[in-house]
Image 1 (cartoon, rainbow, N blue to C red):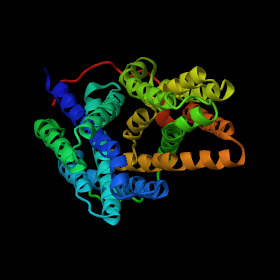
Image 2: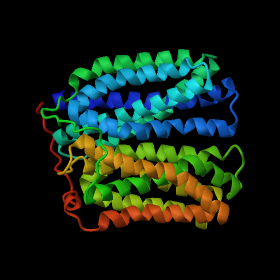
Image 3: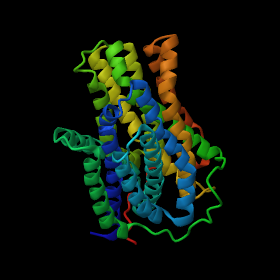
Image 4: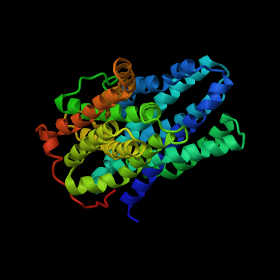
Length: 393
């Protein structure tokens, strides 16, 4: 096995542990709600700490990766991510839990930026698109984390014991992987926290991610509500909409790289926007259970490659280093995830959920429009990548 292949496997393990950590927290949220006797509104407020922490961390993450290199940030960040996960299990008040959730969100996004920067180095070695497969492992880890969480609940283990097991797994993976990570030859001077203005190219790539994450947020928060209130599905069938979407998005990331290498990244993004729009329109036009679930399946396949390919394009920015470029694009994209679900609720309050989903369908098709406008950096990604694997270290 050549060194580049070993690097890819090592980094895959780190992406998996990042997804496992997030899913481990998410799987025990009901336990924290019960422990602190939180109402639905109080829980919703508490959960805002995660995106808040993520936004706070974005400029810090870009600066740290630019100044110290992604390898160093991954190593240090992984240890702090494990500690922040453990701290959730030892909180004694709602205030402590809220602070711990913010810190956990910060560490999660620091890992996100540093891991994706490292993935760009591995992708450059392969000279073809492979970034989506890393994101697929993150998604796969979500299912694994949910399964482990269900087992821990069945065994009646407290969250802190559950998190010790996960933290142990994280440290083992880190010890096995860190020696194989790329060490960047050139590091930036930092130049302070990343509060820079994106150039026109990064702004457009960020908008692609914005619309993609807006559609993801729609599915995460509203797919079940749509099946229940519009389709009138039974309680036992309502979760299938979300599960179908997640399964399609996770599996789609494992073959979207192959298609991007065959057809090009831009063609894949055009198809992705089309699938998102088609899937949501199908769910709106034919509000029956199987039509809606089929539509959510298409949305899952459509969103699968949007963020990985956006990151891959952004990382080749000629104006900023990969770490800063990813931080800028992530910041713009993340606002789509934050604004999407409330926008759906606002429109549904005035009209109905079907109108809301139609609006989100239009947002999805904007991805196709954005990548179809002629731009030099996009032109560079309009042809399939060379399918050649470098064995250099």
